[in-house]
Image (tube, rainbow, N blue to C red; front, side, top):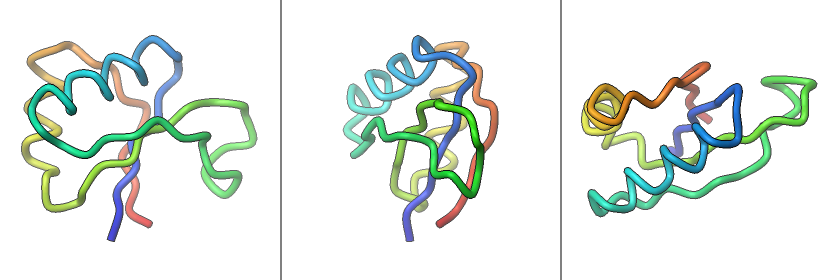
Length: 71
């Protein structure tokens, strides 16, 4: 299963991807799926088994996440 973090700004999506990759996580910027939002936003995929690490990264780097989703 893959998890997805959504963001309100491009800056936060890119910061999230960079911070995750620096910790060795396979993060990738993707368009937000239409079923989650009609806006033209960005999201990042990451391994679901890394959720605790991802939340820690967001706190440490002050990454503002609009939402976390499983797909």
